[in-house]
Image (cartoon, rainbow, N blue to C red; front, side):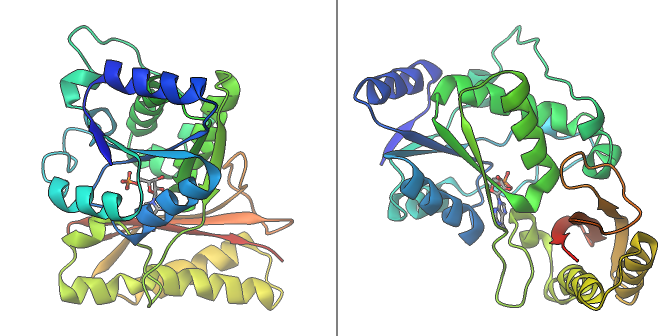
Amino acid sequence: MQIIERVLEMQRWSESERRQGRRIALVPTMGALHEGHLSLVRDGKVRGDRVVVSLFVNPAQFAPQEDFASYPRDFERDRELLNDTGTDVLFHPAVEEIYPEGFETRIEFGELSKPLCGAVRPGHFSGVATVVATLFNIVRPHVAIFGCKDYQQLQIIRRLVRDLNFDIEVIGHPTVREGDGLAMSSRNAYLNPEERKAALCLYRSLRHAEEMVRRGEWCGAAIVDAVRGEIAREPLARVEYATLCDPESLREVERVEETALLALAVRIGKARLIDNIILKP
Ligand code: AMP
């Protein structure tokens, strides 16, 4: 596995691979890797001839009071995991390499960035889209793989690619979970053992909603109330949002018709955890 830190070197590598007719897959990450990330990398290996994993904790997507400084970082461990998973290039730029002095551009979104995480993390998706567009121009992938766990992010990237005509196929990879159902996340590292147990309420409430729909419930308010009720039974958990929305536009819906996205953000201790499920009647 090659480690590349400079933009120019990354661009040259990609140009050379493209000239040789190879298909490049990109998996953007912020490191502190877990099996969810590695599953995206393996998907990338199937979809491309070469897999590039970027590891960059992007300051532009964190608000000042958020966890940029304390975000878990373990480069040596990440490097080994990526090497063992068959990554071809680990792109690991410094912050100044991506945002050199004088960097001024920001990509803004309309309606898609307003609900869900966008409502509680203003500027977050603008930071995500800006860095992803930058990475796309540096790595020039044919295909880019993102996790469905960060559902709103995935939709925003799809829209970015469509609106700005990036010639890139965007893949949404299913959420990878621990054996007991908790969605894998770098931020699970913030949980102590008691909080880790409490965190199961996210998945439990999503499964409960799925079961309600299976039994014929279609009313959004009833489903969301049940989800909130389930999480309220867990004293360590506090719901930030629980919303039923259209999976494309992310606009809130009142009933489960064809499909609906049930999305959750819950605070437990220092961690802010998100999860979601697609409901189908
Ligand atoms: P992060 O390092 O948290 O920014 O995540 C990098 C990529 O991995 C994003 O596309 C995430 O959606 C994806 N990802 C994170 N956790 C999971 C998971 N449990 N299952 C699937 N994809 C994930």
